Length: 275
Image 1 (cartoon, one colour):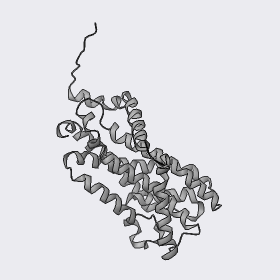
Image 2 (cartoon, one colour):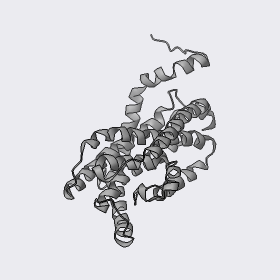
Image 3 (cartoon, one colour):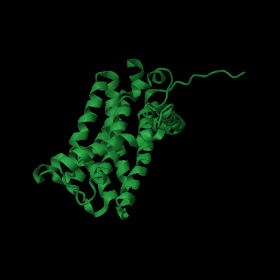
Image 4 (tube, helix red, strand yellow):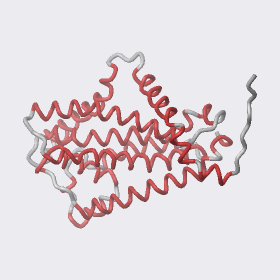
């Protein structure tokens, strides 16, 4: 007859084994991601089409208001293409940031009962948003065929910008997830920030429209570089990268990610008590 054993290790050993535990619990990451995908689309009318419906309808609205009425320039490409190329990373970031920021509270029962690296929870929500992003690319490439805009060799760099967008969402999401456990009013701040971010990011216009003296400051918003990178990769020679702003944005994203992981790890041991 097997007997249960309890293994007690000191805190320093637990910290040293944390990243090894992340690998050991990788099956939990797959399970949580797959569970969230099934829950999201279970008993829905149009299923996976929800992944493209939001950015597509927003693109239509932006095209009517800013493309047809306001007559904003689109750098020589069809305005709907310019907007949808920005909608892809924006809705990925918005969903990943919002869901990872609320992920710990949504899984509070699990956190209070069993041990596992808590970093798996926000990571699993971002993985689900990546699936939505890949589905949305089907519409993007379909629109490019419709408007006869062919991708160039720059498309090969697109995975790096997807990684860039993931790091941005992960860094900000980890900060908000940890703070949301202690300060519950963050649940109201997160959707507000996501909504405001849509209008302060260059979704309906090209960032080159920002006056030169303000352009570098504009790149403090990390999604500016992400959106510019997607357009640069997908739409070819019509869009160029603003390298000073890109370097500034990359530095900020790396700082957000490193500090986000550090802060999350420092507060992780208190999650079960506070939740």
